[in-house]
Image (cartoon, rainbow, N blue to C red):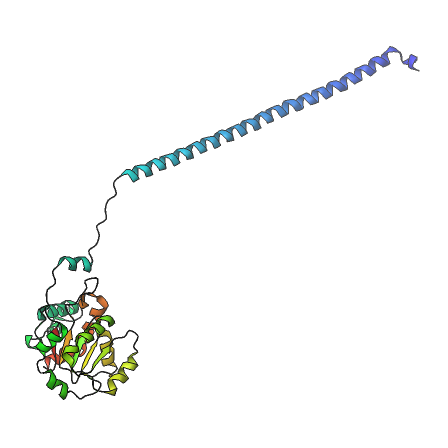
Length: 289
C-alpha cells in the first residue's frame, strides 16, 4: 500500500509537518514580540517609580536639612529678653516703709468705691480727722501703741460688761498674725480677756458660743471672720470703742494687709457695713498701727 502512494505521500507528509512547525514557530515568535514590549513597559514603569521615589526622598532630605539649618540659625540668634512684670513685692522692696496716716485710708476708700458709688455716695464715706487715733510711727509695739491711744484702758475695761461684744477690735491679715498680736498684748491687757477671731481651724459656731459665755474685752482677727460674726449677730459692736487696723505690718512678700486683694475686699465690706457709720456717730475711733 505504501508503494502505491508513491513518493508523493512522503512529500505530502513532509510538507504538512513543515507547515505545522512553521505555524507554531510563528505563534511563539508573535508571543515573544508581544511579551518583550510589555516587559520593557513594566521595566520602564518600575524604573520611573524608583526615580520618582528617589527624587521625593531627595526633596524630603533637602527640606529636613533646610529646616535644621533654619533652626540652627534661629538658635544662634540672641534671644530677646521678656520684660518681667513688676509685682507688689518688687515695688515695695524698692520703697522705704512709712507709717500709715488717715489720708492713706481715705485714699483707699475713694479708689475702691470710685466705680461702685456715685460722687455723692462717695462723699458719705469721707471721715473727719477726729474719727482717727494717732498713727504708729513704726517705733511702737502693739502694747505701747495701745497705751498711747487708750490711756484710760483700766477704766474702760471695768465698764465693759456686755457679752458677745468687744471694746477693742484689732483687724489683721491672717491667723498667724492674730496669734502673734495676742502675744504682744500681754503688757497692755492685764486681766482683760482677748479672743481669736479667725476662720482657720475654728468653726464660726464655736466662736459665737465663746463670745456668749463671758465678757470679751479685746477681739483680734481677720476682717472676713469678724464681718461674718457681725452678720450672724454673734458679735455686737454696741460696746466697741476702738478699731485698730494692722496697717504697717508686712508679710514675707512685703505685702501689707491692704495689698492682698481678698483681705482688702473683706476689710472694705467691714468698714462700709457698720464701722464708718459708727465713726461718724463718734462712737468708734480708728487707729492705724
